Length: 386
Image 1 (cartoon, rainbow, N blue to C red):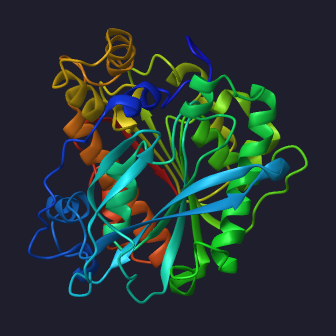
Image 2: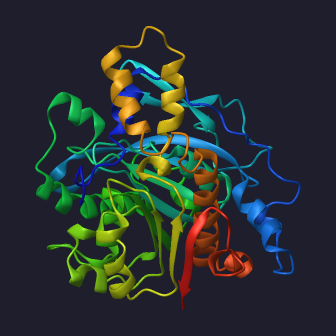
């Protein structure tokens, strides 16, 4: 891997330590929601708008803990659909960080979950990141009817990076897929913290999403790594700038689940040249979708631009923290790069469409996942193999 091996959302580490808020996105949903579309007679542009906007559900946010590999304790964030007419007295959610709270864009803390069944999606953060570093996407998916859970990979988080408790990278690589499978076990088993959402999960519809080292993790869960066999419960995989060059051919060949990989053409951390070609050749899962975001960068898949903007409004923020965040913001938030709004729009569009197709069995949005019907000026490449 180039420049910083497996580096990803460590940007969030410095950022979240000082940030008091994330810039809210426009959460107004369109008159017709994605869940209400039952025909492919709509134009692709109309369908795209439906999955780019928040879905018909309000979003609940909860917390739990899971015992991961080597008996490590993993904090877990939970996002889930909530009936808009049954939010009770739930207040706006925040994401915890020592000494700080980071407000959610649209989440409600511990609101009562809607009645399922809903598919389960596990999100795996990148190296030195945190479980909610891509909340623009995890919250969005919950609004479209998915229960999303994200464990902190303890020993490989922002907190570990600052506390000097990070584990050996090779051990982390082996721990991560075990962590994800343990999280699935805990959700489906109704373990403490999951009691209210577990009954609403469809145990037959499970996906794993990951960014960078998390993309490595998602593929490793599906393909098997080390002594960990492929998790056959996984019905779909989404990799966001996935660090694949650390995976053996056998792991990639073992990925039998439908797979979508999104790449950033200008990624200086997980480059296309040494990460994209082997999965194209080796991953067996079908459909296999590849999309390259033109002018996007490694941090286009995270919330770093929101963090940078918030720090800019904090005149007393320590210079060292501002400089650290600005360094990561250089990988997705600068003029001349893909605007972060466009990047997030496309990531939400493609990921939501793919998971609706694979986990809900809804082919309404398949046209958005293949060329030429899914072509967009922000995409340098869009290919689908069935």
